[in-house]
Amino acid sequence: MKKVGIVMGSDSDLGTAEKVMEILEILKIPFVVRILSAHRTPNEVKEFASAAEDNGFGVIVAVAGMAAHLGGVIASYTILPVIGVPCKSKTLEGLDALFSMVQMPSGVPVATVAIDNGANAAYLAAQIIALSDIELRDRLEQRRKTEAQKVIRKDSSLSPQLSVEDYE
Image 1 (cartoon, rainbow, N blue to C red):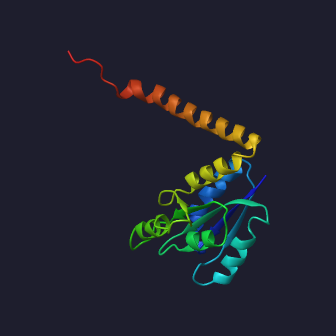
Image 2 (image 1 turned 30 degrees about the horizontal axis):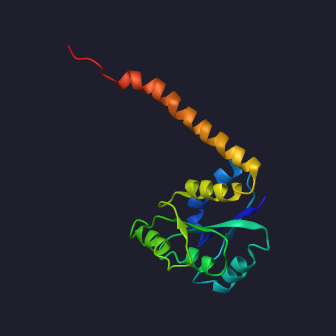
Image 3 (image 1 turned 135 degrees about the vertical axis):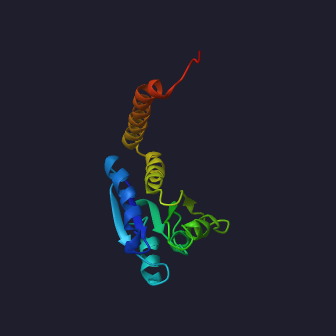
């Protein structure tokens, strides 16, 4: 099975990256976590991204806040899918990171999920890898069924308590 690379711009992004790791662990997808800065360690970013496919990666998740150029820099060195996860910051609430990720030039895409939504990045990475892995596809389908059942159980317990069907 292909691995997922999780690259954080700094250790302050760890909370969001942990959401990615949690889902990948549930789905039994191997992953490698790195801290690489597009601005402070550009040579290491280039080295990682350029060799990612040869090193068994199928997808790279770039978790970054502030200017958030990490995903775009990684995407410039590989044709592997890159998924950006913008992190919320104190100054602009993560909008700066979101805009940096979604405004990539034509031909160098970074698929981007919502601010701090590491779980969806993991699910998207899993779906990409599942295109060539039937066992993972089965696990993803089972996970969706499990999540649907949780909603149905919550509806069954909460709806009767909150509903008013008739006023006399």
